Every structure is written in structure tokens, then in C-alpha cells.
Amino acid sequence: MQEQQLQVSTALQQILSAVLGPQYSFDDQTALLGAIPEFDSSSIMSILTMLEDQFDVIFADDELSAELFSSVGSLRRFVDEKLAHSV
Image (cartoon, rainbow, N blue to C red):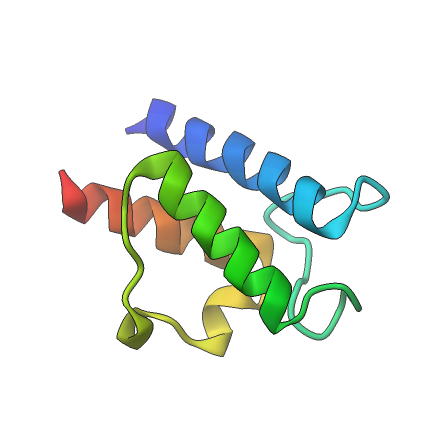
């Protein structure tokens, strides 16, 4: 399980940098929604699509909420839980 969390964390950092730009540094405490101007609905869709492709999962609309995107940590935990339930 620890290895999966590390993979998710690493992939999420790479995806966020690719979508939002390398000028940001991302860790679990990094605020996203409302804190980074580039973090808008278009970037959210790109991030979700890249995560779906990376981990071969699908995020249903009813699973998504603004709270998931409040920080890198909340998004990482959501992906961790999704992967744990898709096994």
C-alpha cells in the first residue's frame, strides 16, 4: 500500500507541474482551488484525464466535489481511495 501511495504522490506532482506549470512546488499541504490562478475547470479536467490514463481508472461525476480539489493532499487521498477500491 505504501508503494501505491508513493506512486500516486509522484504521478500527481508530475501531472500538476505539467498542467499548472513548473513554477509551483507541490506537496500534500499545497492549496489548489482558489489558491493557484491557473487551477480552473479546464486544468481540473486535464488533471483528472491524466490521472485516469496513468492509473487506468474512471472518475464518475458524482464522485467529484470541490473539497477534493482543496489541496494536493485531498486529491491524493481521493486517488488512493479510488485505487484501493478498484483492485
